[in-house]
Amino acid sequence: MGNRQVVERFAEAISADDFDGQDALIHDDYLLEYPQSGERIRGRANRRAIVEHYPGNPGPPSLGRIIGGDDQFVDGASFPLAFSVVHLVGSGDDFQVSGTMRYPDGVVWHFISLTTLRDGKIWRETIYFAPPFDPPAWRSAYVERDP
Image (cartoon, rainbow, N blue to C red; front, side):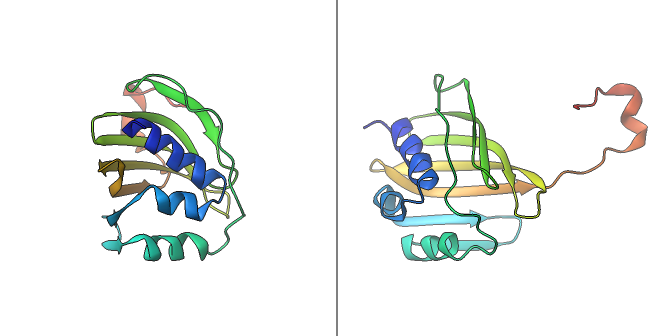
């Protein structure tokens, strides 16, 4: 199985709430970093505990088809009250996934996940989260607004 397929299967395992399937795709030396909060989650057990105990977890998400080449947009796969993958790009051991995530309170944030594989498994992830914000008024003459 190629590395892109590993990333896709990882997303599918997340969508199925298949914790064993996720764990099987995670490297023994796994590390997840959240730079904005300064947190490091080391190892499968700690990652799994966070996913299983997330407050307000609405239950298993769903995942649509992931399509396109390594540098193309993917289908707007939706995870109700969780993630929507907008773009999956990468080659070799390095992949980037971007999209949106809906929190239990209904607010939609953007995310970017930088994922590195080693030995055909998810080895490192760095995930950035960004809440929506109102643009400054001074830019309004120079920009288009996304509805």
